[in-house]
Image 1 (cartoon, rainbow, N blue to C red):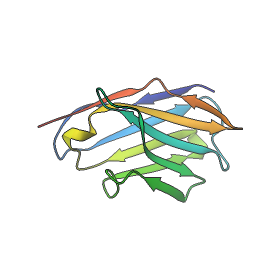
Image 2: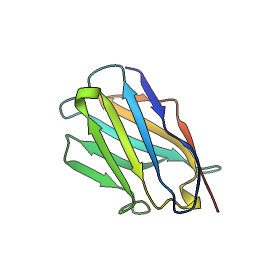
Image 3: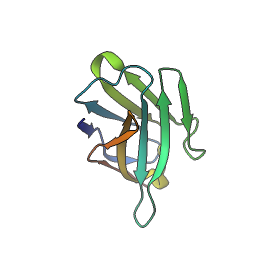
Length: 114
């Protein structure tokens, strides 16, 4: 499975970005999908994950500002990020877990400037 992440960029504090992650194979069913991020000098962390279309969870630092969603028909995962803060800066990776195997996108850079 190949994952292609896009949508990152440079945005000012309080701005919004929408990340997309297109999968080369079906993501339908109960497969686990997630967005992770890695800030400079820090370990990679889970930002949000989704299983099925209604079971979601978020890191405390982004809850209420980020929304994860999936479009099974388009084999695409999204992350809507609102009210961005400088601490949201990092490389964002999408992750698919299918049949107990983890697949990763190449990462997309998000930079929030103050």
